[in-house]
Every structure is written in C-alpha cells, then in structure tokens.
Image 1 (cartoon, rainbow, N blue to C red):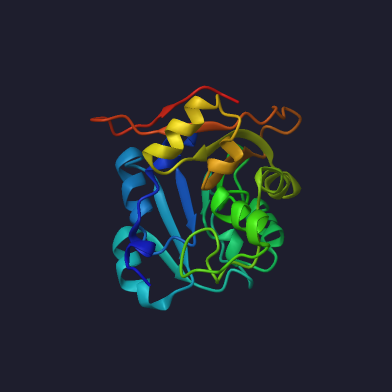
Image 2 (cartoon, rainbow, N blue to C red):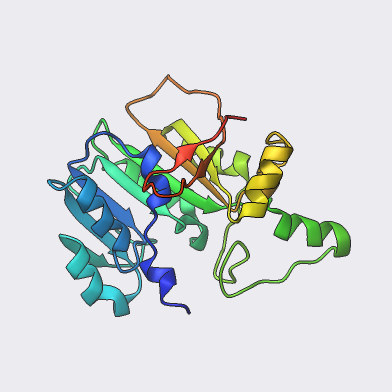
Length: 234
C-alpha cells in the first residue's frame, strides 16, 4: 500500500476543531502525521495515538506523546478524559463501528469534541456504475477499499454519531478536483451528495438537547492560505 495512506495530514478538519484542546486522541492514526500537525495548533496539548499496524510504532512514538498499538475491537486503554477525539477514515474498517465509538464516548471529558470522517458510498464513482451495469469493483484504496466492512451515506454518518450518544454540531463534505467543485457550483449544490468523497461530522456530548439540522458545507482550499473556506450551505 502507498505509504502516503499512513502519513497524510488531515488538515481538512481544521474548521471543525475546537478553540482549545488539552488532551487529543487520534484513533487509527497511522504514523501520527495529523497529531504532529495538531501540536502546532495546540502546543500545550497531550497527544495520544491509537493504531493497529505494529510496523508504524516507531514513527508514531515520534509524533505522539503516547502511542498504542492495539485492536480497536478489544479493550481500550485509559485515555484520561480526552477533549478532542478523531476518527478519520477508520470506523468503516470495523465490523461494529457504533460499538467502538460508544466505548470512546464513555471516556470523554464533558466538553469534548468528536470528529468522524467516513467515505461517501453515494459518490458518483460508486452509484453511476451500479446504475449503468448493476455492479461495482473493490479497489486497493478509496471509497470501495476492499478492507472496508461498513459503508455510509449522509444519513448513515449522522446516525453513527447520534447513536453513540453525541449531538451533531457540524457537518461538511470533501470534494476532490476542480471538476467536482465546478459541478457543485453550477448545480447550486444539488449534486453535492453525489460529488462528495468524504463525509465529516463533529459531535459533542456536552451539546445534548441542542441538535441542529445537518447543513453539509464544502471545504475549499484557497490558494496561498493554509485554512479552507467554507462554501455556501445546502
């Protein structure tokens, strides 16, 4: 597998990050590249990386204050009440992601933020071949990664977060490539659910009773800036 699979920095979540974070857990963190980046935003935060691939242990130990190689389907270590927990393209690899997510929620600080990213199975690259030929093909990576055990659309992503005892606070999608952005603009977001490659949801236990309607926004990088701007809501 391409080494970038484990070293990619998920800077696209920046707009969902809380103003402050004291204890950060990245679940299925690969080499810990995203944790290394987060330390530049929260220099005083304690970072914990959880990963299943033992080959990444040495690099992860360099990027996180605390590193654990473990099976997420088993028991969890004591995480010390984290206030920011990331599940970035990991839950779809688990047979019971909702069970795993609930286990983490039970350890959260009261004011914690949880950010979940999952591939969007409603993307045109999946839905169009099904419509035309009635078939799809697994791949080594991407939405139809052959190691994916669960698949999510927008409704399923919201249910995953809500069923874990979290209230959804923010939702946005990732569009890849100029063509997807152009089509999204030209159709005023009408095809956004078919153009999105990833669905990203943030939730909080502290926000219980304050659920908001899901407004799926698009993160679009701007030339010469490190932070994405959010396009109009749909």
